Structures are given as structure tokens and as C-alpha cells.
Image 1 (cartoon, each protein chain N blue to C red):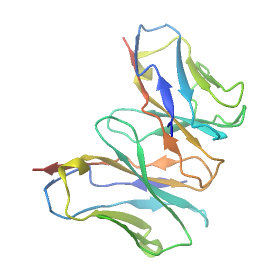
Image 2 (cartoon, rainbow over the protein chains, first blue to last red; image 1 turned 60 degrees about the vertical axis):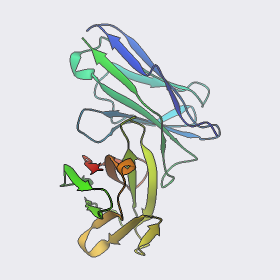
Image 3 (cartoon, rainbow over the protein chains, first blue to last red; image 1 turned 90 degrees about the vertical axis):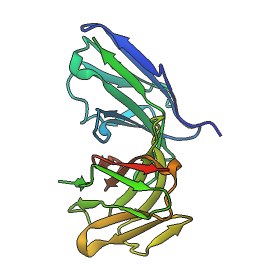
Image 4 (cartoon, one colour; image 1 turned 180 degrees about the horizontal axis):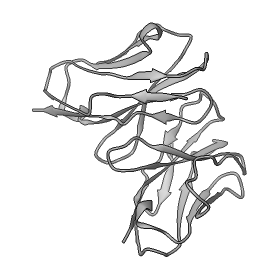
Length: 114
Length: 112
């Protein structure tokens, strides 16, 4: 079946611009997660959705970052006033429900801020 | 606080050699879950295994095996008879709820 998809695969933007990254989870998965992976590091948790609501956004680095999942399926990660330090691969994952369920990851969006 | 340590940054082996990737974790939770993921050059994380804290049985899946020891807080991963296609970055992860804590990964290079 179809896995987690993310668009775009690559995004280059100028410092100060606004970007949106999209995640389409596996059909039927109620839990959705965003992670950020910097070069040479493991993924770091950003936010977790259960259904339409953000159950935990404690990993978002600051208020320039925001994510939504209005219909409980597709999610969009939004970054305002991008900075060079935001450059990373942004990974989305989904799981059947939550907790110990294994998370299935998308291919990621590589964001480069110039 | 939870923490995962993968002390081996990079390992190179020759094809057909066995290789073990180490993972040491820290947690105060009594119930937790451990995972291994593979990240090939394409970048997508591929789920390999999940183990809960109450199940210390070792597991074997083909050429892969996992050794979970609570006494040493370790969850090591062994690849037997390695192949070039095993070349990737391997991540160990820990969760008590839903927030995965990843290690920094071990890059495995299998040389033909």
C-alpha cells in the first residue's frame, strides 16, 4: 500500500521567506508526527497530532513554527521568517494510533535556507 | 530524561563479515519501547524492529538479530554475513509514550 508521502522533496528559500511543507500519512493512521533531522544527527521530535488536534507541540523550536491537520489526515508544517538555521530535513511519520505503535516515516523534505 | 547513545559513528566491514551495532539507552520509565530503523542513502527511515521493555527475548529475522539486555540497558543489533545493500545509517530509538528519542546513528559501510 501507499506509504507516507511528503512534498516537496526539496525546497530552497531565501532567509526571511515563508514555507509550507506537506505530509500525507498512511490511510487510516490517526497519529501523525513531525521530526527535524540535521546533518549527522538523529531525527528530533517537533509535534504530534492525534486526529485533528496537536497533542504535543513541545518540540517546536519557537513561534515561527506552526503545524495544522485540519481534517485529521494531511498535515502542513509552516515556517515563518525562515532562518539559515532552519535548514534541515523535515520528516513526517504516522502510526496506527499512538504510543508503542511503530511509526512509518516519509522520505522527508530537504529545506535549504539561503 | 531519556537518552539513546550510539557510540559508533561509522563502521566499515568487508562483505560477508558479521557486524554488531551498539545501542545504550537511559530511561526512568518502567514501560518503554525500543526500535531500530535503517536509513539508506535515499533518506527514508525504514522500520526494522520494535521491542517492549518486558520482552527480553532475543530476536532473529533472517540475517538480522537483536540482543536486548535490561541489566546493561543495551539493545544491540547484529547483521550476519553483511552485504553491500546493508550500507546505510542505522538508528536506535526509545519511547515511553509516542515521542521517539533517537540516537545519533551509526553509518555502516559494507565494502565489496
